[in-house]
Structures are given as structure tokens and as C-alpha cells.
Length: 283
View 1 (cartoon, rainbow, N blue to C red):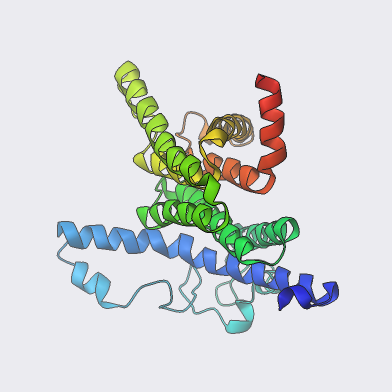
View 2: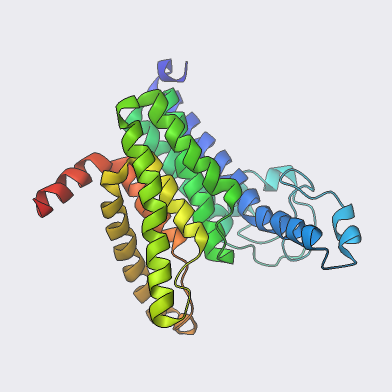
């Protein structure tokens, strides 16, 4: 039905949908690490005050959105994606303290990814799968950047969704996807242990293995070298720029997940021409 709408209605609806999905991702990246931490504490029974901590219902839906500084509830009209942030000029209506630009940036990124997928693949079930993959990568990138965690609750469903996508839309690619998932995990696992044996340090986390395995499921094993080259290149450029612009970050560990996610977006949205160019270079 969406595809039958005139462009003057279709694209504004897609933009609004992307902003709303980006707004929901803000909730996920802010609350999911806290929810996971509470669960780990409960399993380990590390804190006697845990019962009081978890007695207040806390999940992706409850409580309502609050100011990060003063915990005042955010009104519905201030919670409208992007518009609410601009209306209040990036400040809380109650305490007037600045609200992180992360919120409109994720909303805009979500909107851009949704628009890009629809523009390339059209309004279809296939696009719905690809939008889910792109937004999952965005969520993982932000969580990893903030906490250096890549939660299994996102990476593993992303892997299985990639295999399901191949089964439904590209069954001839299913073998390549299964090999891609295996090769993605094992390649970084081998690098991890090699780096640890040589340096005695851990160069990355197990979440990175699972994320590359998920990308292998979505893209096939043939695209994995391109993904690694793109992620390393993007990571080097951004890492150098951050250390030049923000001196306090010099020497600080940089999570690899956001760069894998960026490479994944590029490969999902422009993989065919890039893969052809890559094959031309190495052949």
C-alpha cells in the first residue's frame, strides 16, 4: 500500500517512520545496558540492595522518558523525534541543562538508513529485513561506543535473521551465508588469540566475533575481506581524527564494533558495485 502512494506522501511518511524508529533506538541504547547489568547482578547476587534497585519496574517501555540530569518526565510534545529537541534548543524544559546531541543524531541516522534502504530496494518485505539489519547495526555501534559491549540479545538474532533473509530471498546464497557466519567468527577468534599470545593483551571482545559472524550471514563469505578492509580503514581514519581533535582520547581503547557496523552498512547498501570493484583490484 505504501508503494502506491504518490511521492509527495510516500517520502514524508518514510522520513517520519525513520525518525520514530531512531527515537526508539535511543531508548534501547540507553536502557538495554542498564537492564543487562541488573540481570548480571541478580545472577551473581553481588548486591544486597538489588531488590530495592529492581523493585521499580525498568524496561524498554517503563518508566516514561526522563531528563538524564534531573529525572523529570519529558512531556509527549517534547518527545517528538527531532522536533522536541529543536523546540527546547537541546535543553531540559525543567532544569535547563543540556541534553546530549546523541538523541537527535541517532534519530537522524535512523531516518537516513530507512530512506537509503527504501530508495535502493523499494517498499518491500526484503526492505523490511534490511531496515531491521541496518537499525540493529546502528544500535550495536552506539552501545559499543558507549559501553564497549555488544549484547548477545542483538548480535545473535541479527545472525539468525541474516540466514533467514538468505533462505527467503536469496536461497542460492544460503551456503555462502553459513560459511560467512563461520568464517566471520573464526577469523576474529584467531586474530584475538594470536594478538593475545604475542602481546599478552586482549585486542577485542567476543562480541566482535559474533558481529562479524552476523555480517557474514547477511553478506556471504565472499564479502568478508571487503568488510574487514572497510572497517579497518574507517577505524583508522576516525581514530586518528578523534585523537587529533580530542587529545584526552589518545591511548584510550577504541571499540571495533562501530567500525564493523559502518562497514556492514556500506556493504548492505552498496555491496554489489563495491564487491565488483574489489574483485577487479585483486584479479
